[in-house]
Amino acid sequence: MRWEIRWAGFGGQGVIRAGEILGRAAIKQGFDASMRPMYGPEKTGGWSRADVVISDEPIIFPLIVHPDIIVAMSQDGMNRDGRSLKKGGLLLVDDEIVKGLVECNPSKIYGVRATSIADSLGRRIVANIVMLGAFVKAFGIVDPDILLETIIETFPKAAELNRKAFKLGMENVREVALKHITSARLAESREV
Amino acid sequence: MDQKLEELKLLKPGTYFMMGNIACAEAALIAGCEFYAGYPITPSNEIAEHMSRRMPELGRHFIQMEDEIASAVAILGASAAGVKAMTATSGPGFSLMMESIGLAAMLELPCVIVDVQRAGPSTGIPTFVGQGDVMQARWGSHGDYELVAYAPSSVQEFFDLTIEAFNTSELLRIPVIVLADEVVGHMYGKLVVPEYSKINIVNRKKYTGPREKYLPYSCETLVPPFVAAGDGYRIHMTGLTHDERGYPSLEIDDSRKLIERLVMKVRKNAKNLWKYESYFMDDADVVVITFGVTARSSLEAVKRARAEGIKAGMLKLLTIWPFPEDPVRIAGEYAKRILVAEINMGQLIHPVKEVVRCPVVGINYPVGYAPPPEYILDGIRASV
Image (cartoon, rainbow over all chains, first blue to last red; front, side):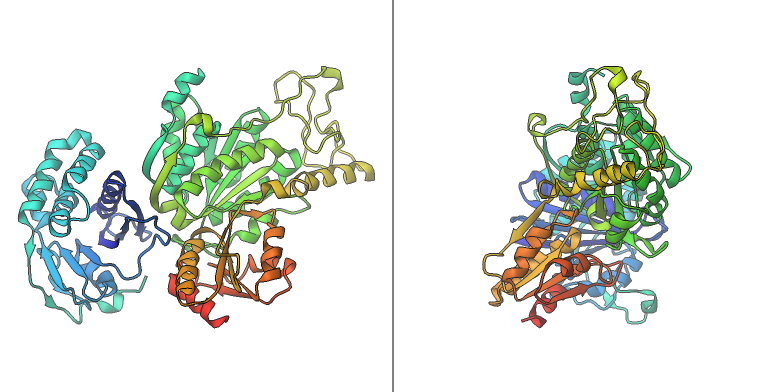
């Protein structure tokens, strides 16, 4: 089994870090994994993406063309990457920020208000950890305990904060419905 | 630093999920790199960033220079002083280092230059992938010299080939290029660090004979034994054509002996330097020859072609220079057609054409993007 997961957002949200943590947890669990970060020349505030492949066989091609799952943390990420979703693929969004679907028809949409939840904990920076909690609750793939252990190992000084963020992500993810947006800044999007 | 203490601070044997660039930096530390000089450039930055933290921890030296020209010269200075030295850069910086790569070849100073290729020419797309420095790695500096260039296609290979690059540079006293690419550099993947006792580390051969008999550029062997500046021997290094003492010479014999030696030390060892991997080659009618990230797409494509009943095979080159002529020639003797897949408009295809007789076709993908397997597969389908 091979899972292809694309995290999309903007630089500073921690999508690349989330992708790295997810991949590392998968390796710990005995899977093969790869993560390819991509970003524009601007880094913070510019577009940002992490393509994670998790497989129970050695990964030959480490990149992603049509992901099984897209995790969108910004509308811009949705505009840019939504169309790449595999037919019948799954979507997880920060549904307070991502207001609509752009050229994609997921079979299921999960939402979690990751940024608000992170704000309620006093640190917006943990929105990606909320998202990881929501991810593992919605899709499984990796063991939640191993994922949390990996998060804590990555940020040993902020263990409590991240544990809370992760837990709130798991608790607050639910299925949502999103409308289609057809016009939204599509001209700006480019195929990558 | 005490060797045992030092080992404690190196990346421990085990399994990791690591970025290619960081794996390269950690490999350099294990290989014994004592000096790093560099100038920041995407997509190689993580190597310098990581080294700037790790080198002081190990009591070694890191310096950020004012540009890539100075960086390349600084590592030559360190090498002349007897330590293993490296730098890392990408296309635009690699261009600036060319003059010093020729100097390294001429002075026979071992050093490692990592080029994490990005889309070019010129500034290109800094954060996107390219494979356009294949010919530059070989022919970028003027005059006759040979060097070695390795091309990793995974995080593990980036780690292994960085150690290999140090070993080869020490063994032959030459500059060695690690020709990575943006995907391999930025990608995170599985890395297995073996027990240190299983990692081969080569150190340059030192001269230990009487002082008055020392000839820094002796032609007795292809690789003269080394003496560091400051060891107390009389040494002289110059980019001018020199005699065995290292002094400038206009004599035809000195020129012939020196240049022949610079070239032959690599050519005569070529067979030992060739690293490559064959996939499905036993009965292949169409063979994809490729390297770097493109090899990852190509292998997936070859597997899918096999599933369709096409007798496809693949040759992944880990050593690009000296060009692995024998395996490529043999592939060409049995295959009906050879495809060369690369993210450029056709560079590796030239040495391939030089050694095979069957038709050779390029599969070229727009610079900046890694080809999906479908693209290579279309090329394979079109060739049968």
